[in-house]
Image 1 (cartoon, each protein chain N blue to C red):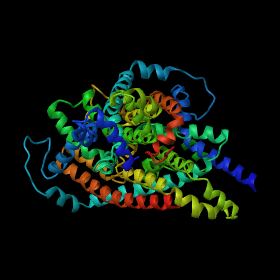
Image 2 (image 1 turned 45 degrees about the vertical axis):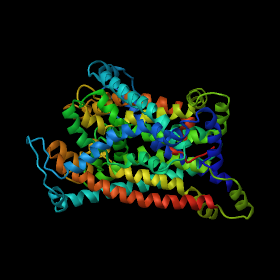
Image 3 (image 1 turned 180 degrees about the vertical axis):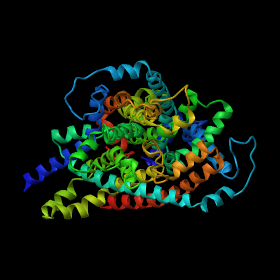
Image 4 (image 1 turned 60 degrees about the horizontal axis):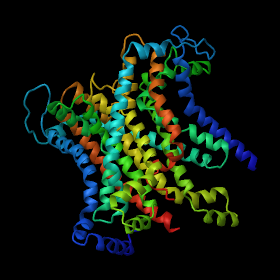
Length: 313
Length: 270
């Protein structure tokens, strides 16, 4: 629809009606129509530039004035061992939760891709966790794993695993937050992959069946490459958003026990709202944003390649 | 062979369904238990509405619930007003930087929320938007606007341009065509995208945690108070969670048909 024909039609239609202003309208109308949403966006983008500026100052609510201190906050951050620990926690959290969500989500979507009442009902109810606020989800899991009233804790005791401490132990804290993340966000991957499965062309699959290819062969050489763009979108969204995950960790363990789950988001929140050092709190987030930006550019390029490959088949 | 495959398919799906649905079911069960029944994990008990009475009556939870509705609905309405024209422009017009602009909207999803919220906290304190409805509604655009634009763009692209041209040739103004023809055509998408972004706004925790206080506290933030208090009333915690989840489950069921489409970010055509 972006063809030359459309433009000709547009000219043909515009010309007799408003001959004088046609050029002006044609050229600027898209920008005019986009202006309100851009304005709203700039209102939110302004703090983004303030963030960069504040990160170069010692802004703090503890003192009335602040001064420009250059890269001191950044130097302090990079020379702080707890920052590198935070980076490690953030990376572990993002990779583990995204990995499980993709594996589980793709698997369940493949299982759901049938036209019968059972699949239809399942599709309807399996998305429920995605609708629940991550904080509420964390509360629910806390209720279930609570040593005195928790139902999961109860059943684990019956099978002899009563000692499992969930968020209370440094050994299982990461597992606990990742399982909540997986619970909430796997439906997101399921929905995306299902959307992909429903858009697949029929003919290559019929051809593959005629050729007698095994199910695994069809999956590996046909389904997976065609699904790749959808899987990539799921990967990009989950990876980028889980690196910033704040709510689940905050609600379950508040970064603990000790500093086990002190991710970059938690560190930034504590610096800003507990220690009142806003300048230094922002350096963590700018570091995270730069990393996320670089990784997402890389992944988006890969996504476009996957899309070209899928549509070329 | 085929029956074995179908059977194992069903078994695997049921296993995942237990994982996905059991927590919600358990929350519901606990919310009807009295404190004395709480400490045995049995399923058969005499249900009580005491927890709901406590939560809705004494704790001011209803006010937080209302706050959440005002803020989320306000954000969605504002997004619709500015987002529908934006989605139309990105779908219809061929202009310089179109794809870049479209991707810019989407990329706001990837900006760390705290990066925006920390300076906003300072700015809001200075200009008096801290702990105000409008302050929260404004920042919620970060969630609702990109979603709305990307879902609606796909819907607009599906409408044939010729319909528009035909109507315009019949003498209708561009605005009339937009309101009388295009809006009804994208109606289902608009409803789905609106409700979906409502759900995501409703679920947000970080923005109200840092940019709101007593005035506009939302249910997600208020729910945490149930752990922070000295004596934990698990029944009330579950009742509060159930109440906050209820509108979302109802919305999810009502937009079921569009959900796959809505979350595919315009990737599914036709």
